[in-house]
Length: 579
Ligand code: ATP
Image (cartoon, rainbow, N blue to C red):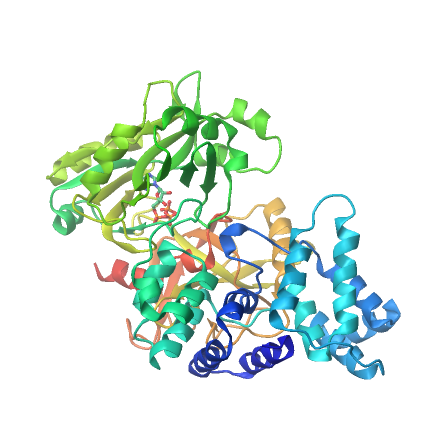
């Protein structure tokens, strides 16, 4: 396919206001793309160059793309800036100026050729790479047609926001195969095992359903992590699970460790590769794990070697840094409490029962008291009183609470079900857990806050059934002066001049500035209440004509380890209020 034809699809997608129509445009695109083109095509649709977990980026700020565009278009910077002021979007400016210039474009390249050039931009690194990257961008803008140049400028500056999620691509694939959405659960499962949409699309294109039904984990490709449901009170745990395995809930960060031979990679919750931050843990994996290839999970938590006590989350989280790594690993040593085995020596373990996975991981982890890798403690219990005793004990040791696990449960990638139940020490009487929300916009501050340019922000939760973010609260407390400044800076990098599309963000409330849904904020509140102005759960009719709202919401922390599709859902809140 010509890249310019691919851009016509992007244009069509951008113009539609209906999710259904968008899905059918995607299905049509998948039909037109050849087997060779479908992989790059899918990555580019999502504004990426490869699967998310590869972490490859173009590495060019918008400012740099603008300067490359100015060179490519052969205009003066002030001409570009003037049009930018009117249009506010680098792609639109490139398009307009390209159309106005008399220079005819020289080539109309194929998608695969453009993809290779884009890949080169992402691959270039080290001295002189910025100049080389800029030159490629300038050449492409100079040589290619206006519409192509427009989308390339947006793509490279990270501003290609077509307003759909990975899930919409899966719907598109289902429509492509079957003309409806019914294959989405199957596709979603495959995606949770191998979160590479390019690969899934390629398998669908070349092998239909056969390609995805048999999908297996692969070392160095992260598996989307299983998550826990919550209950309102401890007796509900036994009611849901019967006899179960109770482990402490460590308040650190989750790691999925992949090892093959002497190579070790680690992934965070949002699939970022983070092994370079934890040389101490990497070394421990090589020393303590006796397996050729393995995928396992645990929670890493800082401890004080003097007292052997756990550190609070704020201190542990200092280890999630990109610099001063050696120094920090001395200052805040980590222990990784291992609780899951997903793959071992060529064999997938995700469909095996919990007790079998546990027994196996115990047998291959050499655990000594002083070691950095330790098997998470567990207790088989069948009575509420036993869980209560464990809960009190763990909380008094500075842990967060408990995780109760279904003994014959399989590992369900990406699922949040009653396979695992978390119960945390209460933050308040009414809600015994925090809620993860996404920032939708912010308000200019009043009084003292006007100095920061931000005084409050609007947040939403994710409606899984509607695949939208819906508003739930406006937050103005729990934020220090320094944090306000940081939040403003962060949000401004992703402000959007228009309201996001209806099917993406559902909010009756209009903040002063819209922010593209990207930042996850953990929020605590006293109670879940109802409000006619919020849209979370409104259309599902949980409560008359109202949506869910939060009473006294306050920011706990920014969760940069979480993806926006990983936040609390409307459906979870619905269950919390119903219990
Ligand atoms: P929270 O914000 O409550 O920590 P979350 O939304 O980040 O939770 P959940 O999946 O709901 O994620 O809660 C489970 C998390 O608890 C896991 O992702 C993991 O990081 C952590 N955890 C701590 N101890 C355990 C354990 N023993 N077993 C499983 N997960 C554990």
